[in-house]
Amino acid sequence: MQKLLRPALFAVLATCLFLPAAFGQLTLKVTSIPFNTPPASSIYAVGTFNNWNPGDPAMILSNLGNGQYSITVNPPAGEVKFKFTRGNWDMVEGDANGNYLADRVLNYSGQPTTVNLSILSWEDLSGDGNPGSTAQPNVFVLDDNFYIPQLNRTRRIWLYLPPDYQTTSKKYPVLYMHDAQNLFDETTSFSGEWEVDESLNQLFQQGDYGCIVVGIDNGGANRLDEYSPWVNTDYNEGGDGGAYVEFIVNTLKPHIDSLYRTFSGRLTTGIMGSSMGGLISMYALAERQDVFSKAGIFSPAFWFAGNNPASHVAGHPKQGDVRVYFLAGGDEPNYVEQDMLAVANAMTTAGFSANEKFVYVPSDGQHAEWFWAREFPDAYEWLFQGAVTSVTWPGSSEPLEIFPNPTSSWVRFSGVKSGETVKLQILGVDGKMWRDSTATGGEPVWTGDLPAGFYVVKLKKKGGKWQSAKLIRQ
Image (cartoon, rainbow, N blue to C red; front, side, top):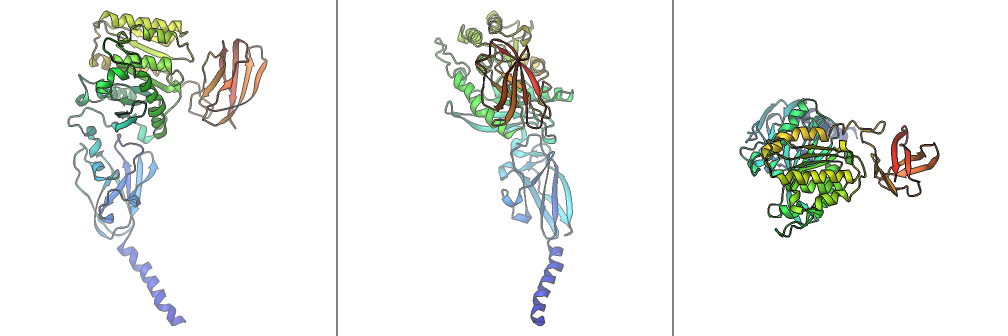
């Protein structure tokens, strides 16, 4: 028996003694990646150790957090060549200028070794494939053909991520913007760009918290249709604006919120555009106050829809606090300012206060991208002032708001996850307890039995502290 075991034992010992010398452990640690790396992407190692398969599922790097990734491979000692991809050769790493990068080469000793590396760019995302692009590295195209089910069309969607997105776990407010061809890149713009990315990067360096911007390309020939819910009979265009807004609310926003670290509530969600983009942004804010609390209305083409924009705003009473930045230029036709003021006044009719709107008409302003680019930083700062530092749940980063407020028959609560149960109390100003129960995130709470007046609403999450807010019952 002992003689029979010896050959097997020798084989085991040979494997243990000699195999590591031939095939060791090489750890490739990526310590930084390009700002415009889509956060949902997997990063692959490809090289002589896997026959140069760019999408080998066994070669996906582990995400270590804070923008760092690693993988351990087992090549034989000697020369090792490799690169990084995002799953295929069309999405391979590039040099510092986004151009072709030669194979990485290591002379591997065969001993356990860790090598720190940086990915400088992705060839396919360098200027989003546009020679001479002026887009900053933290701007990329999320999808060239994002499907719009409400209109049975597709559209290019751009994304701007704050400079610290890859290195922190922060959540961010979100600003949805139209005419994205003109927002970030001179080479895709019609007559100049807004320089949204440059402006936000500069504000970040000056201490701004940061904001995600989702840019939606206009539909070209469908632009007037999509940017107005009302048909202009002279042009025979318009009418798809309602469906376009529902696309943003019901399709695009849930997609963004599922992939990126966003503050998804209305207090931290805005919408902005110029000309026809200003028209549809104002419509979206008034129509969907449950989703948007901020709107940038630049040189709005309210004339396209006649009296409808002002009537629409007046007919949608205030349901929660908002901030609306109205901008027109002194060198634009007089009706641009006059129609804009009519809509601003309609907000008063709808119950909004004077401090919820800002109207600015600089004398040199024109209906042009350079003007909107110049005014964008001030508008952004006014709109998002205090958005993240507003009242939050203890131990939570999500803002809390009762909505709609004032109310007549029901309320919901932002900052409470769908399906989450919280304790609820509603007290009158005289201290009378009108409700002592529970509430479930996403479900309405009936208030139709409350007499008109002021109330204090108290909410408490499991293991948390009571959070109070004021409620007005109309």
